[in-house]
Image (cartoon, rainbow, N blue to C red):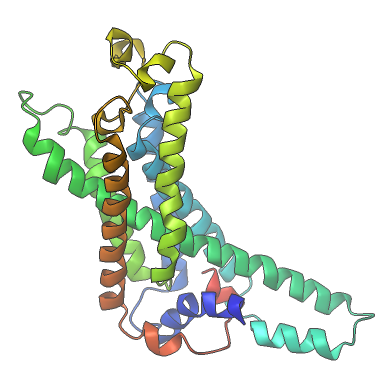
Length: 293
């Protein structure tokens, strides 16, 4: 079944590595700590207000990283609450078929539970793949591109607590989670993860277009198109997103390419970290509890 194959990667790897990874309770604690820390840093670094700070892709992705850990912690808690045991997807299907269509509340309940647990596991997989690529892209862009060309004395924009967390420690969280969890990054999910960049780009253009004071910045430049953090006034969060600049279409396409390369790098890294995953992708049975843990 298509649904089963989507989750086979996320379940088999935990079984294969069960003797070499921390117990599930340790993964739960790690995820709770990560979620609390990341979301706490997110709130602490909201120095200019949500309307200004959430105009940046960095804040978008860092917030999504915190939400992922919250979702993953909930999935781990569900797994532990049920004792780490549960029916497989094939077992649920067999019971549902054998019941013949009537007088089967327990089976219906099991099938319903299986459905939303698979959805939760799948959601965790896609979100994690997205934040992993975003973290790598943001870190490489800041330290490899923006930092060298920033000639501000002392580099206050890069060398600060918030920047360290959002452009360095974020990748440490991702790599640690990738090692501990049983979620495999899927190459096919790149098509879904790219929507994160597309939605951000569309949001940015709409934010400028729907604000009467910045609408003209879509096609022309001027004093009203200069962002001013002291007044919490934001137009274009990044110079390359300015639609008035020449070749802006290529800048936007470049963002998609850069994100794709970061995704491919994280996918390749996950394959090296979990080399047995391809051997298990063909297995038909998926333990639902493990799919979300």
